[in-house]
Amino acid sequence: MLTTWPHTSKPPCYAPGIVKVPVTFKRAFDSLRGHALGYPETVEEFPWGHSAIKIKGKAFVFLAIEEATFSMSVKLPGSNLAALTFPFAAPTGYGLGRSGWVTASFGPKEQVPLELLKSWIDESFRAIAPKSLLKRLPQESAGAAPKKVPRPKATARTTPPPSRARARKRS
Image 1: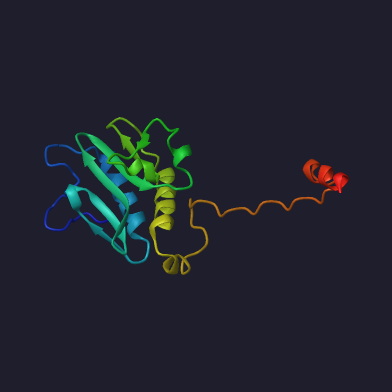
Image 2 (image 1 turned 90 degrees about the horizontal axis):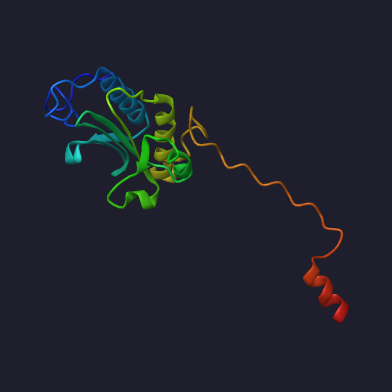
């Protein structure tokens, strides 16, 4: 895990007003940050003092620790409705929630479900990354959104649909 940060001893997303950042937040932040940066061609930037992990200039995850709260925002086009059923999840502000972005927020005494959040990072990366880059990755990584399962083929009908049956009788 990376313990040194660009230009300061603490990342900008460790809010300067907080004297003590809970150890669980630091561990969660480092684990999720490392997972996100494990994808090819990803970079980290610090807009608004938050950690933004980007691919080809587009953010796919935001991480922050502010006001004794750890938060992560990701784009979940396939599972955003399911994600919003968790008590710690809410649509991301600034209108991003309408595009499938979800923010998970945790207080100092709450457990951070790392494996679930890593699967959300996987889905977000796959939603944002260019298709040419995705072709170079394994079809599914641990926790990634499942591949679409093809629909079963329809069985042959023995009788035509009712509307066609009436049309044939008239002619």
